[in-house]
Image (tube, rainbow, N blue to C red; front, side):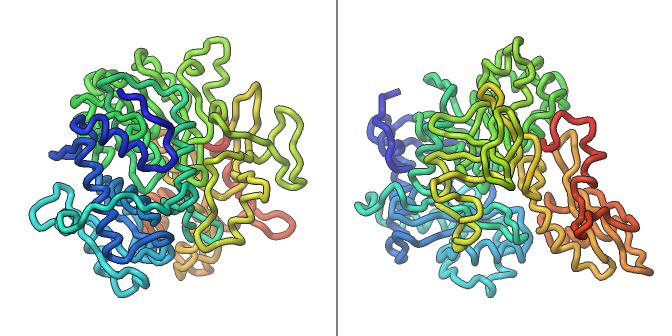
Length: 523
């Protein structure tokens, strides 16, 4: 691979590889593939098309689809004209979709064919969208996105684009029960790519597998690794077993996957397990891997290098990592339950959440990080931004942990967040919906352990006098109004909820029986 200068903007490396290795493979997706030169041409056509539509610095567009190279093209093309792309979670229900799209202020919406019916039902509620561009998985004849690209004049990167321009808006659950738009700048994203690649080795011929959803930093931020390295990418539409197996058989060597995927592979039998042993690097995160599963994976794939990552959307993805050598350190087996060490350039503090003073060494407190990766803030929410970002640049994670010998251990949450299968679910968001059921008097939503998903959503409900609603009926009610992964998998109906003297529901008491035998109280 040709040596490349340090990047300053998110598309710098794409332009480098298009100049120096124009005919080398860039990305393969379903039945199509593109070279680096072709990828740059498509990105510049996106930029030209956006400029022709009046989209420029400070504007936003939105992308809604399952994994598709068009998402990367739109993101980079928009960034090249100083605009930002809001990548919307395609699993959201109708009223959740219009909220995120409206909140982003997107003027153009790129939407996949499968999601178009959902958009048509809420089209009259989309306040800012001036144009909808349909994207088909295979670029079939009549694909509006392909036609739009073909009709656009390629545009070079605008001269006034700066590293501090917001290029991505990623939605993360918030304290109001509604998602918040996390504004990530070009500087943030470049810093994340450079820092998170520590300990990540690539040789000529290696291929990156992008399978995690692009509405998640685990998909979008990870996809920039290969772009930076000049490494070919195989992108799957979804992380299903057949697609993942096909990608590995086609030569994928490096992957980022959630622990639930690893569990599914190991449960699929010896042939599937042997196939995935071809991976050189298995990066896992969004939730730590349960210890029995991690030990099984290490034993099944002894020639694979494992990297665990911990992070948040607000830091572009990864902020600490447990590198391959730490996974095999027989002298420190306790580090397998850690989140590893901070990335280069990242500072960490452990702070008493009440006094805001640093705790004693190795003591537990809220984890704070400072890095060039820390977001610019929440879109349109300055007050909530100030709640998590200090004036001197520290980001308050809301996670409780400690640091021992440089290794970060994440132990609990201040925030009411549930991480299920790598997806963040904020309890008030679920509670807001379930409280609308006419038979529900009060409730609490908690996360409980799940061997496949790490955590799963559970509701504990008190019914109104004389009500006879069943758990099944209540779950069905939420599934009509929320994305499936946010809905409770189980609901307990009880006579009363535990409260402290001030009347606050004691969620920790509700959670305690489920986590009593666990190494940590979050997964």
